[in-house]
Length: 292
Image 1: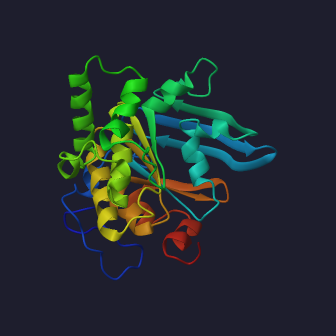
Image 2: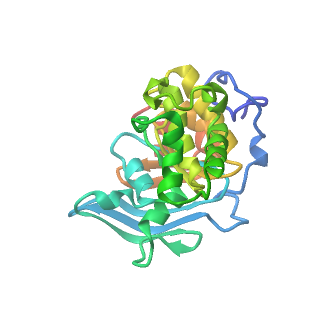
Image 3: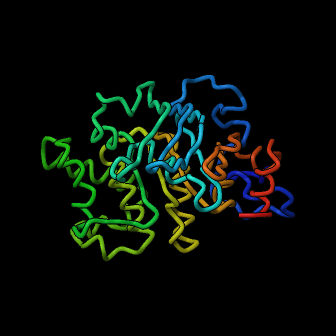
């Protein structure tokens, strides 16, 4: 079941009518291959036999998930089920937590990201992160976007730097709103604008993958819509993994949905299948609101 045009259906199983749609989207049949269809391209991210521990406490158990390029993969599940821990494992953000360790394999472009030879700074440039709460630096709008370019020595001239900042703000759908006040404080922006600024900052250093941890949970409906539209636009250039507690949002923006429960990956499949005909009864109970 799907709405005509717009974001992919936003109804859940047994919903009487679909939610309003926003902007044009391809039909479900046009989406990239997923686990259930059999991959025709190599996964961008390939996770197998993954266990994650905080000290002696195992919080993720035997996770196996293939994430394909230029798709949006939504991670859903109740609070405390391990979604954000899994997300942060994909660029080793959990390394800074005392006692945290990973067993098993996480490969990006067929490279083991936990190998001793991996440059973690370069990994985090390639795998950008956008957090739940926008975290702009107490600098100007321009300097927020330019920061990563400067510290990574990614531009050779002031003119090139200005061009990269502009293109990043355009990619984050923010340029038209800030082009005349680039040297104003980033703290003067609205919450939704600040979040898009953080997305622009992540895009500036040319990542391959963008991780988003509930990027719209603190935003009003209009700002949330802008973020969702932006996610759809960005997937044509990036592989996106998003954590969300909002079932309608997962249904609207993602190609693939993975359901986590008590540290285990219960099911992963095309989003339309997860929300209309999931394989596991536990998945159906969650997405229809019987618990969680």
